[in-house]
Length: 150
Image 1 (cartoon, rainbow, N blue to C red):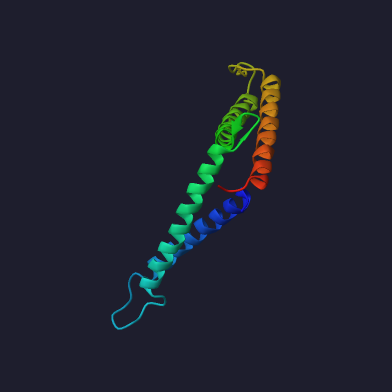
Image 2 (cartoon, rainbow, N blue to C red):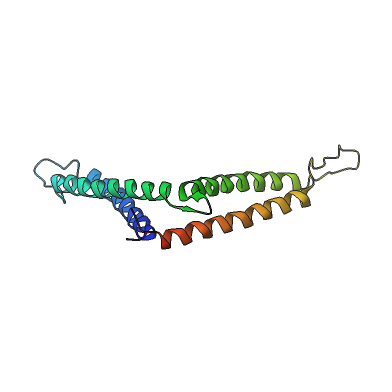
């Protein structure tokens, strides 16, 4: 099984787990004399099956990610780099929005407000980080589709 397939199955199991929790809660109580629409015992058995498979996949995905290298970096390292790049870009874009917004003055006697940074220069840096993020994500995706799950 390819790593990408395992990642897809993991996402599906996580979604099923979320839905199962709702179904379990919906059948936790019934009015006296009524029966639940689904058997809580069967739902808990399904929960155990899903969690067993999910645990196996998470273990194997993490093992694969930490063992698979390309250009001297593991998938785990690339994922951490990608996640931090996303956070950096988000913070920098918010900062750029604040730095580039205009402050309206009603009269010429009001205090002038100006940006503390060069917006065009910082925008170029953010654009370069965005390019690096795309390249990193493409590398991760390529490795996901070409790597066999351990």
